[in-house]
Image (cartoon, rainbow over all chains, first blue to last red; front, side, top):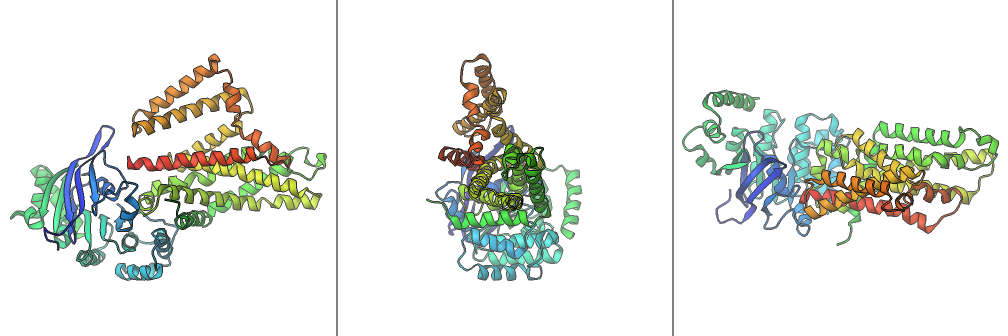
Length: 260
Length: 286
């Protein structure tokens, strides 16, 4: 867990993203300090993935600025150097389905110009428990294994910063527990920003919570502050602006999802 | 900062492996050999000419390539975008130009392999007669150079859509423009209009920093070009754009003549479209 004196690793300064008439993200500002696991919380369509794409430098903000380790990840000068220190798991864990996990990791190791690719692969294979599927085509793997291969890809360069877009999506409860354990372990040294809409996940792994709704920041603080003496569900629905009746229904859905 | 060839090579190898690891790749290669074989030997007059050359194939080769090459390149970007892997690749420590070059060289590698198999036609000619080795070498160099240009055009087309079919059609239309320019005044005129519209759109996007209203600018550019052409404001409109036609530059290779200007033409097209591809890829940073 970080302290408030730890340096800021990720900073969004009033970032917005506009697509034609649609504003996906409205003037979002927040910070994530070194050694923190920050949960990026919000209902589906809140703008979490768009924000993460801007943080990685994949998309440029329409306005505002992003700083990753003190530099702009979108600028041509700093982009390459920052990308070496960043591990990113995009939404739905996209992978080359015709490759085996081993081939995929070798490819990204080569693209990342890692010194000892075999050693790096060995490390992430252990961390993500993918040895049994290492030589099977990714297209034939279950969603859970694909997600773990995606995590292995993100961890391959042993990055300082990890940005994970719904890392437990598609995993079974056992796998979810393992990934959460891995995130907690990695969070001791690294800065991690993970998006989720699962409240249990927030409680299980996060030091701080950044919640957005309809592209706007609605909460930024610790899990205890978010709870504010009530259940996380009720606070979530309150901040997401869900009407009472609908909120009860969604609470049931949420519970079902967490149980599954 | 120069190009990191380690990265480019890794991407090219992945592209090549992806194509050759897919049964559809072999179907396309087989169709290519069959189509070029038919173009070389099954056209009327091949045996009556009694010449061991590929003159008949040369007449139809650009048309074959305008369909074959976009079939090779249609998935290069479309598949990445459809699966979302472009997000993964473009957040790696790689420069846009390295990604574009890697993808280009991978696709060109597939085409080169196809052309390598098509060398079987020379073996057939050698069986039937005594083909001129120099002529064969320049002819195949010509085929390869047409591919150098068309692979670039196909790659650019693949960037415009996540749908492979749309990417194929766009690529085939782009290559057809080069094939038909110079064959007839009307064809040169249409190619000229398309080129002016495309250039106006790109200049607009560059100046504005966004693609907002770019469609209107493209249509406006096409209308202006059409007026220039049809009213004769620019008298040499058809002749000028006719110079861009592949036939004019490919013809010499089939005759055993390798002109530097023709080589520069094909390589120049590839350089221009690869620059545009890199520019398009960089737009996500705006």
